[in-house]
Length: 289
Image (cartoon, rainbow, N blue to C red; front, side, top):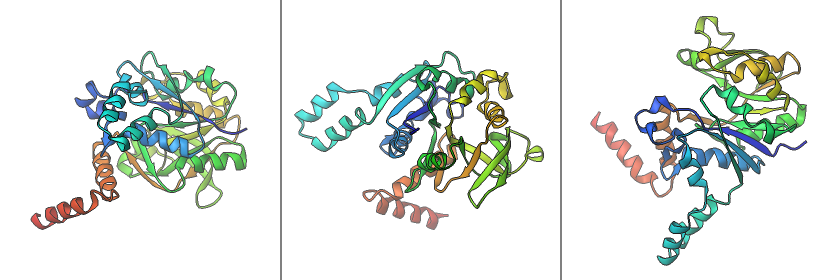
């Protein structure tokens, strides 16, 4: 069965970016001239997804507005003959089929994904976290989908994480099949570094068989007093084999302030209209230090 649906949870409160996230979703923070969530949706589309379910919260209306039509703006651009900008604005509202389901309260990533169950039905689906940007010629989600088609099993994206950040990830124990693929043995949510089974952490991309939803239902409240996706993965792994895939690409956790700034700098350096000026500025900074 083809994977055509994706769930993008965006209901989190974004506390690491307060106070700006008091009124602005962290997923709408701009990387130059596009918000983070735009890049996530682009990755989904480039991976063959044509049906996206956003799991939103009370403060996330601007995400819906961003992907909606904007008649007043489009009229203004037409009147000014700014046809290039007009096309950009119109393309945003016609990218893909979008649906919005509100998570009533932030009870964890597992609970957020579970709210999409009726829409997912009995189909395999992808999950993309709304604050991770991953840059690669072959999208990270596409890499996972290709592995799913090869083995027919749920596949989670993983990478090595620094020791000081192990406590922020689901950390896996796995049996290597090759340089990039593991058979999952276990996954532990946010362990202390000394208790972690490895330094390989799950990041914000997943492809699941639909059975993950029933497994999430069976879990109890976990770390942080939330329903953890990690606990659902552990239960699913006891019933069917799961793979962990070491993806290729550059990942930016834009929910982290330092990573967010790095993303802006790197994207600016890859922008032909900005590259020269940014390089000159950075060189000047080096000379002053």
